[in-house]
Amino acid sequence: MAELLSVDRLRTGYAEAVVLDDISLSLAEGEAVALLGRNGAGKTTLITSLLGLTRWRAGTIRLAGRDITRLSPERRARAGIGWVPQERSIFRSLSVEENLTAIRRPGPWDVTRVFGLFPRLAERRRNLGDQLSGGEQQMLAIARALVLNPRLVLLDEPLEGLAPIIVEEVLQALRRILREEGLSAIVVEQKARQVLAVTDRAVILNRGTAVYDGSSAALLADPHLLEARLAVGDGTPGAPPSSG
Ligand SMILES: Nc1ncnc2c1ncn2[C@@H]1O[C@H](COP(=O)(O)OP(=O)(O)O)[C@@H](O)[C@H]1O
Ligand SMILES: [Mg+2]
Image (spheres, helix red, strand yellow):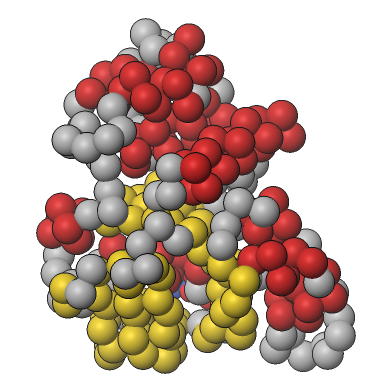
């Protein structure tokens, strides 16, 4: 498969702080990668670095062979990087349908298709953004990323804070988007097992470096390996990872 994203020896952070050091990562066209790691490991920083929102120090980022390392966030978005932020930014004073039509770009995902993916949103199409439940807002945030028809979509903790039944609905939608539609994606999650089940590969970050890069299925099949990788570097060898 052709390489879509290639991150080579990336070093980024904020102001004086270096958060990610020497990160390399590649993603093939159609591949879905789970990005795991404990709180503060640098997952969001990696996502926002791909979007161009952090302070770059060294290394390169290529999208479909094009060097995008120094492009502005706007130009990266136009180059095809889509984003579902942790804080689910939606237009609260627009209806569900307007949230989608206002930003849509040409491509396979249109409003009808995302309503097919999220029947709950179809029922709420005339409701305003701020009348939606947390779960519906998360679905709308994902739908918004899809109608922009990105080449690569970055999702930051899409299951966070959702009721179990909504987690199932969102997971089902992710399974369809990633497995059946073959959208290229990086999914950050604390709920490791659930996201491993819908991705091809997993990368585990710890203190700004990658401590695992391999198949999701292998991690899912070996809970000890998963726990050991998540717990790396916490100073207590063999200790289970802290929850949350
Ligand atoms: N805006 C910021 N300014 C300075 N440091 C930050 C900022 N955002 C995150 N950090 C630091 O970067 C590290 C990684 O954070 P983050 O990428 O949010 O981790 P994760 O998403 O894995 O929980 C943490 O030590 C955090 O305190
Ligand atoms: Mg985060």
